[in-house]
Image 1 (cartoon, rainbow, N blue to C red):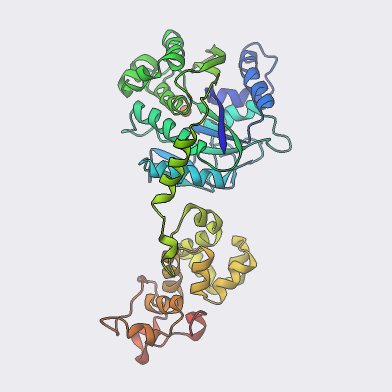
Image 2: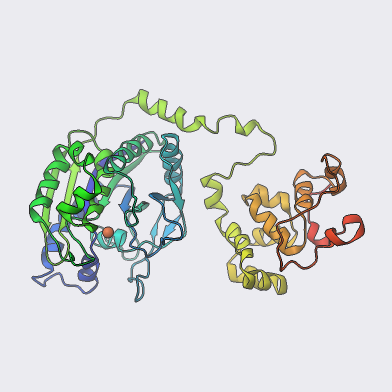
Length: 442
Ligand code: FE2
């Protein structure tokens, strides 16, 4: 089973990445950063975890306010560096761990944490500024990561206690994952700082030291504080330090602090720390959690012709779902209709994926992992009604399927004002171009 081998806490200021990229190791202003991160890097080199759960917040680089969520778990296979305004840092992408991430996602949802999930997004300095000084990465990173992005910039945000409880649920998730993996939890953010408004430049080193004491010995006190209390003591942006509580919640009540440092060069208190000491997992609790995680979808496999769109399907079929989703963009659907082969090539679709779309193999696409709502978009673009797609998925002719409906003549699709050849809506006999009806019929 997977085990949590300890927790690392590290601030994630852009200064860390700046100092690293410009090789300021010997500059007296920046050298304390390297000095303070060195024990963390040595600990990781010695313990050699397989996976780091990277708890961080995005700084409106890859997540925007058109859809903002509290707890976003990264389930993708690879994580590149985000461009935050003048080009991305020159770091290789780091491998994800979709299997562990998906399991954690199922487990957290079973424990009533309503997570959001992301893939194919770049990670900003919240993740990569500490990571770049934690691990050697030339030519590749020695570890996989599962990013856990916290939305702490747009209020309301979860309570501190909720961050703490998420950590407790994260521990249950990791310890019930069946494969042998060594996992370290890395919490980033803080300490005291404020970067906006007339209070910009606020710091409170005394509170930072007190926070580090409480974090180790009495995290319950920290879990009881409000955002306003964190902001008063440590600055409004410094309140992001509640993310650390998720790491703390994933460790035992009693931990041993193996290292602790603090440095305030400019705007943000930069702290680094290592905590060890997780109790042996209780086999009974582990077994119960596994049953609990499986219970929600248990039995669904007995429902013939039913394919829940799970995280695993979402990751596996992301490319073709993304291609079909972009049928909502006029330029993309135009390119597809005019020259499908070039469009497939541009999107990097595999030969199997191209073939499924070429043949309008509605059932094949469903089996492959395409969600139905992408099929109906492709249908709208190619002039195929939803009913044609339902019939094809069932392996029936349209007429056979229609006879099972209360109103056999009802044909429709999600096509809007740009729709072209909806032959089934205008011509007698519900005709549709033969090549668009596709495979899967009897
Ligand atoms: Fe931050």
